[in-house]
Image 1: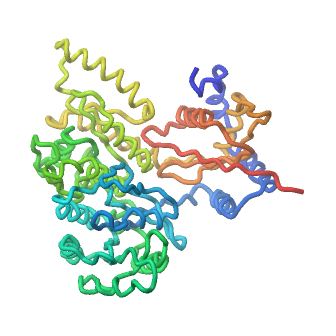
Image 2: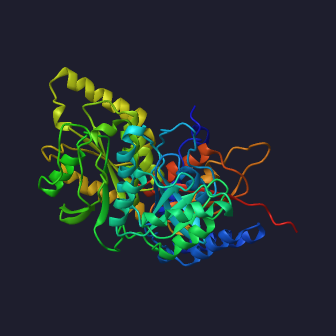
Image 3: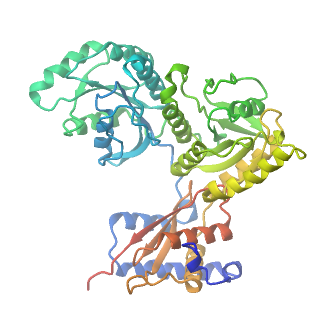
Length: 507
């Protein structure tokens, strides 16, 4: 029995009840529930959220694209330590072994009430031979996708030829660059930092990422030049919706873009990893304009093969930062791979809308036994490996011939509409109370957690907050999510459910 099955308790009448709901009555009920929260210990963030609820349905704020700060530098200069220090938590992987790859490259950070994305380009460190090229390639990515670049140098070693190579790229970049002189643990070492003036990147900022010295001052300076909204992602309200086409090498991303754009504008080669896309492309599809964001912010040189996975995830993260909806292209002629699932998980983590495009469908004929078998296996793979995104629209296409490309547009529109969808507070609380009445949460340790009040705190993606008297089981939260989807759609959009467990006020 699955974790969610224990809440099933047979069919319920939720759909009927909500269909015949009197909206005014639902609003009154929700207001009463909202008022009863006064008996509980609430903090400032709660008060802010609840004030937002009272702004009404139009009070929902669209979150602009966060500005991006990227960190570059040679191996072992302390990039990951600086990432951790800025985040205030050990999120980045700090290991003594060079070459610790990881998928996470983008983190959400905050300083003085300003939120921004932090991109750590140091996830893959090459051997000494490839070092120049690799660090330059990382800098290229950072310049492409950041609003501000932090260039970290080990002040105790001084500037190396690799550093000077990167400086030339950064000086051409026309973007704010902060030269971070790391490993200055006390005032006696400050002259070491001053020696870096001669790199020609302006004033060196002496810091000790490990001890935290100087990092606050550095962040204060960054905030002076960091835009409120990312200039790189370009978020024009009412402009073409932004689409990222993602997938592992050779699944047909470039062919799909070429067909959509109606011209050969991406170099397509049988060698994996040969694409170098130009920047964003505005394309007309289905009578509407769409902005396809650049997913290949970097040339991947063939002899940097060991770091290929890291660059792919860096690229994917960069594209997702800029996009609203991701089309993940899967090649039906091959089994669904771990890399496919990892790309989908990056989309989920970024909170973007999702469409799955199954490419090379035209290669699976109806009469060949092998093809028939492959189709059968594919369905099984989808059920097993993609069960967690069963809500994403699926489109079968042939990027090469352009077949069924028109089906991509309704799928994109559905996913984006779900991503923007908002459920009024009255209706959401009616849904919660009916759901709990028919499927109560199991008693845990002699107590039964209650849901006091719920509200949709944001769209893009739809984010719900539940005020509760105790912790809800993960299975019960998934059950709420599933019923939300069944009743309100949300096809193509992730749903986030956050809990705030609150105690009664002491009399």
